[in-house]
Image (cartoon, rainbow, N blue to C red):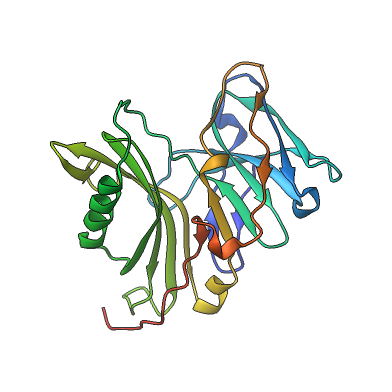
Length: 249
């Protein structure tokens, strides 16, 4: 199932047409969510290459047992997927925080401190930025970024909110954003809207539901997932509620 996701104020994501994937769709992801009554729908999200104006993805619907919470998402082409759970509170969406580089040295608390310091010093159009989750190893790391522009800007009075994954690499002891320009960043959501509408959005971005690789026709079973009771306390809770700030550009 491929369709255009829209909010009342902005298209959130553009899903690719069926012809985008030519691989045999035979894969399957299975798992269980508890409590079962907390889930209205389940999808496997295949993230595609974005354009300058579109966030592109395939949302593949699955089936979930309302009594047990067991689900299956079938007919998936080979690739990497994130699980999306739709609940009465909002959406729980997997994010792929896995890095490609292998290292015997784990990401240390000092690495995390250095990365947060690097991010804080980066000059951005989005004047509010928060690293919600940082994962990786001593060679590479990914930061799940909540970004907001709540200063007045040339595009109008609406706030702009983005959710992105930034990828860093450790070059001779100094963390640097990988690639030039936007190459080290993957945008998951981009929303321009009045503050009242942004305040109504409710997400939990969950690394445990992200980066699921499907290859061939063998079902991929993921560990049982417990829906968090306290959403604001979850590290991936978004959008971040920043204090008011409406300054000139």
